[in-house]
Length: 209
Image (cartoon, rainbow, N blue to C red; front, top):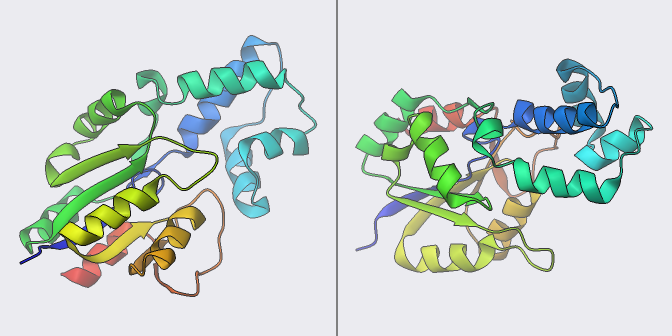
């Protein structure tokens, strides 16, 4: 008999990465002598105007050496220094209560540095709650979560895939997996048509208890 599983995205679902992204950009620009806006303005502009980091810089008429900027960002955004800027969204007590309900909790995260990611989970006190932890690399040509989601759907009875992103929603719809949308993305996204929506992951956890 398959166990009932909940698949959980990490970034901006269980933890907030907003200040990490901001800090990485701020440090690079400062190192090149370019001033940057404050965090509150950064967050407001990204969320309300649906801007990626690069589009935000262009919106602000900031034009760094893009190759060097992108290299710095990719090489450093998952360093322990910047990961330490992330903060919890998920309530650990609620996670524990959901786990006590005999749900298997599976982490599925788009990360390039599994070792630092595991260290971060331990530092945040999240590591022990998951039955499985999966980190997949970014791909330009395809959604890298789809193959793993397909495998997980064969070995588990997936009751929900919880995330904040469009790409995760599209993967769930493609595989006919129930999607729970949390509204904690850096983008202010509309409600997805085939998703159950919650303001944050804790509201979803409470619905299970």
